[in-house]
Image (cartoon, rainbow, N blue to C red; front, side, top):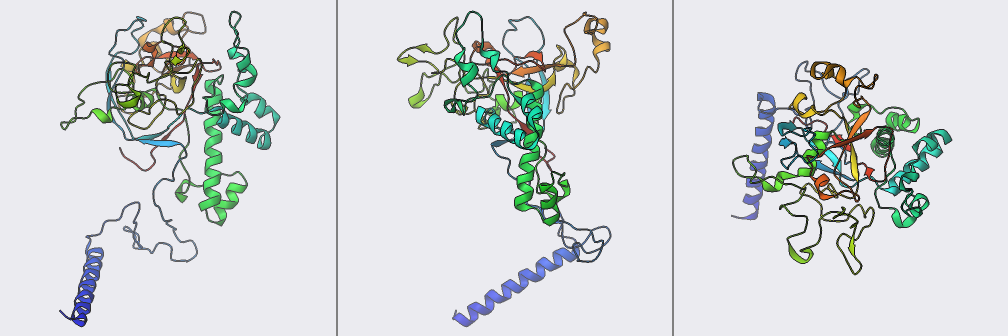
Amino acid sequence: MDQGKKITTYLSLFLLAAVSLTSCNVGGGYKPDSYNTGAYSTITGAEYNSGGDGEFVVRDYQGMPEAPNMRYIEGGRLILGSFEEDIMKTGDNVERTVSVSSFWMDETEIANIHWLEYLHYLQLDSGQQAYDEALPDTTVWQAELAFNDQYVDHYLRYPGFRFHPVVGVTWEQATKFCQWRTDYVNKILALENGEDSEVEKAENGERIPLESGIVLPNFRLPTEAEWDYAAQALIGLQELDENYAERRIYPWDGHTLRNPYGEEMGNFMANFKRGRGDYAGIGGELNDAAMITAWIYDNPPNDFGLYNMAGNVNEWVEDIYRPLSYKDFSDLNPVRKSGYLDDANWGYEYDYANFYSYMSNSIRVYKGGSWNDVAYWMAPGTRRFLEQDSATSTIGFRCAMINAGSNY
């Protein structure tokens, strides 16, 4: 075939494809979606973005903006709870099958440098009182019968600890950090990607409309169910028939605490307390090389790409604590937000005001185990609680976020 005939043939094919596409659009073969809405309304026939006064404007949308430090967690079914022996005899983690929608979670714990950045902008934009209220309690390192006083002054601020997890923060402080992070990240996104009106709103500290598609959903603490699901990370154990080949005691394969593979074989997979008085092993052959907290990227990530979902520091979650949470709450995106059903379950035994119970609506769950905990507490199904205005040297946190625009 000569060059002229080739050009004619290619042109004919191009025109045929164009006609076919047009006929699909006109005849109903084309179906709009969030990314390709079409030029006209499917219910009124009005043209979008026509340039007229009072028109309905449809912005281009390419998906949720990238959230810094976050990993996508595809949702699904899981069994909450622990299948190990309940050595505490609390009966508060009985197994139950639930489903969790897809969400996003920080790949690391929030570190000291992140908190110092937060303090910097609080003092700059919100004043001394807000700054003072956000200061971690560094005295959590003090003890009458231990010499950890060096961490009181140095742990938060000394550059060598920049990427160690922040501790000494309460659940309330962690929640306020999430709110600040939402505002600050969305301000940056609006300044970079917004139209003139949105840039002006961002500069004035005003809310950017969700319809713009240029801002992220709120950063927040993960729910207990989300945290369990992300920690288990069972995606690497799937079978073809929608079942898992096995469960995990910890956030990694196998039933031991040591790495079974490659050059790291025999090394511990988390920063924890191996036994009474043993925080790091012997000099010259340290087992986890961390007397206290470790680098936030220390140890291999789990199958979702999340670091230190076991050990290093415990992590605050959204839920208030109740022993019967696993029995009571919904089996889709479960969370315990209040004392709902308390009377139906226990009546006066949950009467915190009259000292019948330690159960109140201000005690929050924390998960994961820490540098000061034995291996039992690193299993995702274990759970403990603390008053939301309390802080320790063993509790930090990481943020989560909904996967906006997704139905799974």
